[in-house]
Amino acid sequence: MIQITPAIAIHEDEIKFDFIRASGPGGQNVNKVASAVQLRFNVKGSPCIHEDIKRRLISLAGRRVTRHGILIIDARRFRTQEKNRKDAIDRLTEMITSAAEPPKHRVKTRPTISGVERRLESKHRETRKKRSRQFVRSHEE
Image 1 (cartoon, rainbow, N blue to C red):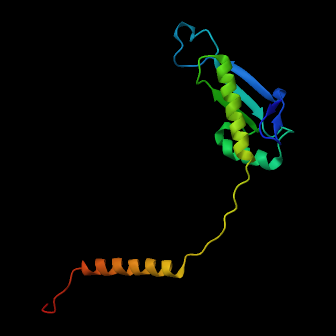
Image 2 (cartoon, one colour):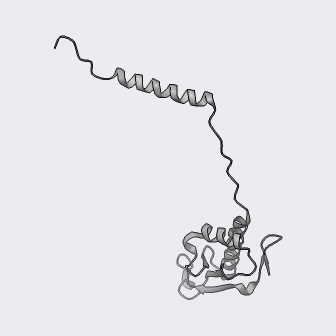
Image 3 (cartoon, rainbow, N blue to C red):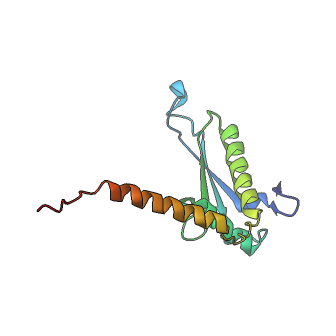
């Protein structure tokens, strides 16, 4: 059981790990050891997460979620499999935690009367400045 928030916990059997070869540094072991981790979590099929959180998690994850609702997290930051596995779980936990926070409701505001007047006055100033730059025709033509 992975505890994410006091109200949300995920069963370990809901997460699937695939170990793949990582690119980058590793010396002689780089072509032999599968140290990168690919975590797969079925967001749509998870019974532990509320529907609102699922929707926010899918939109938060973006392209990391397949059309079937499976979240894929690649972890290849470290050289060892265990550190990459922990990194992937930490990133999943962080994503679910941020999706669990409900969005703040926007309160509509109106500009103050003095603010509207200042904006209009600055527009009039710009208009006068640009008018003064225009070519002036003489009456002698």
